[in-house]
Length: 435
Ligand code: IMP
Image 1 (cartoon, protein in one colour):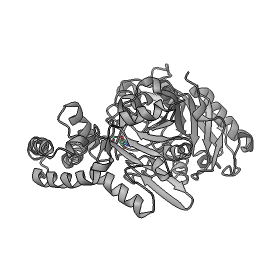
Image 2 (cartoon, protein in one colour):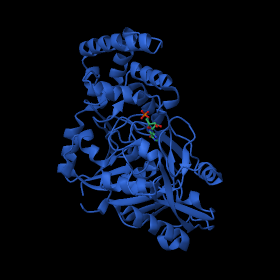
Image 3 (cartoon, helix red, strand yellow):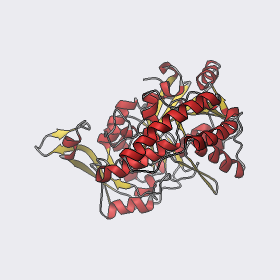
Image 4 (cartoon, protein in one colour):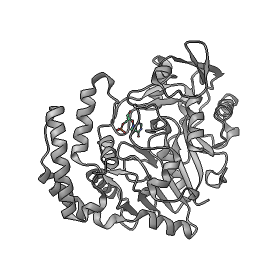
């Protein structure tokens, strides 16, 4: 059981941070393989709350290796600030513990400027990006003009690349978007400074992971965002620019697919989404407001309120298929306590009366869909102290059973509160065998 991937099965913010933190106690290493500081993983340790955007949440544990893989886009300023903040709070973030892939692409100031300018120009059809430069950085990677971590260690190459890129980006910023331009020499000076801070962390992540896996190590691959924000499989174009599906852990960290032998899908007990895009089970009533308030549904990266809705099993079922989910972790179940009736979306109905059981690729078709709900009775009892399924009220157990049945994967963990120990272990997610 060498490599286990944790993925979000909805639109991100499922509570992956807590689960990764919990499982980290039993693994040797934690690896990020896609996304960047658009992510925000919240971890509560005792009285302390940590929000991590780029560094794997495994860093909060002693003696665990944390890797930022080549598939991640790294804003060096954010990476350094995150290290500094953690160290100020007494967390060891030495290069012995944290490793950064030399092949990862760097988010540059012009990526952030373009992200913001492009969103502004889109007006009403804006994606609602986090404005962190994620999309433009992945664009440059695909266009083969990106700046990589390794370039920081070769000042001449860095200088040449930044000058060329800034000339082109300034043209777009000034002539197309009417936005302020950037000074290449200032960027180069800043990035050469970052280089000195980052140098000790830089490594060939693929080689280090290979050694670890060859010697019997257990590695956790920490997905960011969620399957429905996947650039290929999500609600395009309302997606992020990476692949949050589990398979992306292979190219994004430089490990062969056979190393990945289990996939834990994290499912919030209801649905949330930040930014624009289709959301069939969305609620704009008191139930939605309940979820937003009780679940504190505000983005940990941008602070934006998250859109809330009932659990949509069309969404999760599709994630189980796309990510090869072998077992589930249901989070924030306690948020639903007190709601009289709970609804689960089991399928969609098209305006011609036909039933839709998977998410159509066409946003036009999706816009013609309405949710089909199954109603289940809620529960009133406080569940935050439950530590086994039997401790849960019958209606709560039924809700979980129905969820697992409808999405087609077994339950492994159920989270009933933000703390590490507020968790029910149904089966060991690190012991799930290859399907
Ligand atoms: P980007 O990743 O900043 O380009 O944003 C693209 C879309 O993905 C927007 O709708 C964002 O709100 C959403 N998004 C990006 N990262 C996260 C995340 O970690 N959680 C939830 N939504 C996210």
